[in-house]
Image 1 (cartoon, rainbow, N blue to C red):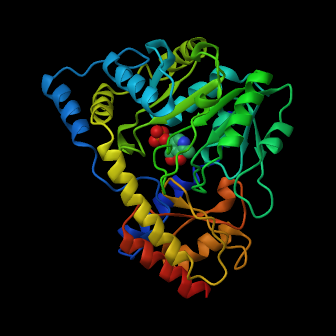
Image 2: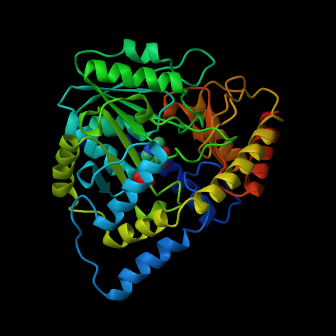
Length: 386
Ligand SMILES: Cc1ncc(COP(=O)(O)O)c(C=O)c1O
């Protein structure tokens, strides 16, 4: 078929594949319970609707500057200052079509073929393939036995002369765990020392429970943003329930940001003008929406934890944020793909196998859907396994 080696080497997105299977089963009228989802079920913020509505009414929906509209970048600057303790200028911000594109822009801009990008397991399913798409080599750091968070010393031990970046997602998809302050501080120090970028994937950063806060890496540097090796990735997909709008962004030093702008200019010109207007409206609305979303997810987290605790042989680290739980099912079955396939077939429950996140024996169960689905889904799993 004359496909490139790169195209042939890429894996299919496991989560998108599962969504497709679940949708097909639903279309056949099967009572599928979807615990594999990755988006909140809430309606978007009112401000998002109003701002994109205004632009639509004007009848002019044009290209915007590659790095994003001035209005959205102003909101992002204020949001970043408020929640992450650093104030970016317009040339430190690049708005992209989702956090996914922001991460891709970054990888393409920092990695030469064969360069290494380190990230701890469990990791977001897309990291390895995105690093490969940028012709880099993914380097995975496993947590120690029975733990879900890798140690800073273990991450440091994987740094070589080819390491260009460390990716850290906190709170973490799939584990829901928050990386502790000590680890983030240590990584900032190592990265500054070794000239390696620290990419903080902050996409779930405001969805943290029990009064906790996921530390911002910017809190641990004395360097001004333009000398900093820290890159923060964020977006409206999760925190504002706006996955379909495809708006994310990066905040980084100016030289790196402007290199990333060049990449994006050649790949997609700019993100959708309508979506940018909506994202500006969502950010301008303030904290009310996010607070209510977080409180609702915290309640659903509690339901998920209570239901899972009724399974006899499941081990669970209570999620501290996101809308995912990552219980250890290895006492039932070590092969997570086999277990997930069996649960889909016999219980009609969609789960995502831990192996996709680099950690066998676990399943990812989401609690972003309805409480009814959480209770019913885990009940069906219990009936099969216990
Ligand atoms: C850890 C992580 N980073 C980035 C993204 C991408 O988000 P976006 O919808 O903004 O592309 C996701 C989406 O699932 C994610 O889980």
